[in-house]
Length: 339
Image (cartoon, rainbow, N blue to C red):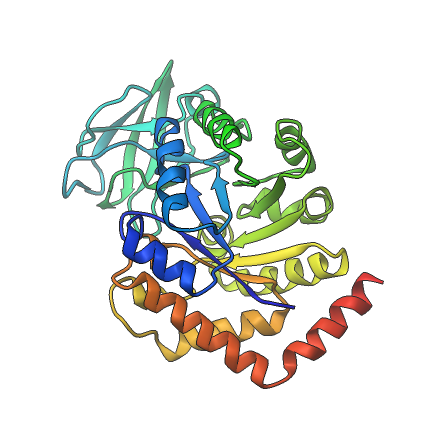
């Protein structure tokens, strides 16, 4: 079995030189992140990619997630300060900033905890009005544009945003054949997206939340493939549990003959440097030993200093894995599990 390489395209890679370089290395899938690509940019982005490559394209939805809006440069909130959160589209500051989708305010309650980004600020909601809320800063930190927000208890959100729906319609109109459902929380979420897709379009469910882990068996069963996004998952579950969830999900996917991919932090050092750490190479080796069907590069190829070099490093890791003959044993194990 060929280990697939999936690459997210972004500012560092949406150009002729990088797309051509990735194409020459026979990567298997280009990912367009709809959290950073508005619906009106979907078709032009696809046309740009296809100008230089025939690699299949996957639209990766925003899904049931909350993000902050556009922030002024260098915004930092301090412990004890009060911040106004709003559904209105504003340029964020230390006093107020946007949370979207607007429906988050429908189920937001006083006492809820809000964490911004991996190591950003932590807020506690004081009171909620229609389309806005007031919160106190529990832990100070930076708040950057369009960063993921985790709310506990989690608000009820639809599995797809209006922007997702428009982007999917645009992508399907020009022949996109793969769509990823972010923050899949149940088989019903998968079925909702499935109902929008023509026959033959591959549906990849991303397991990256507490609900996704809890309902992983149903999600795997309902999907064509699954993707474990360890970054977003680590926002909702203790980070020390993530490797064990990865192993459990990969094994179940193999048991049910579903493709399974792993994303986030595979080569995090290569976002800013041209060489990985030994720990990162060890992580890739162990991820391959778990029995995955593919590896996903995200920030490494979307905003990294050397997208093509990052893929070269993954290729080297895969060749080393294959040279040990462990891959043959894992393929035999997959066949046994699926039989």
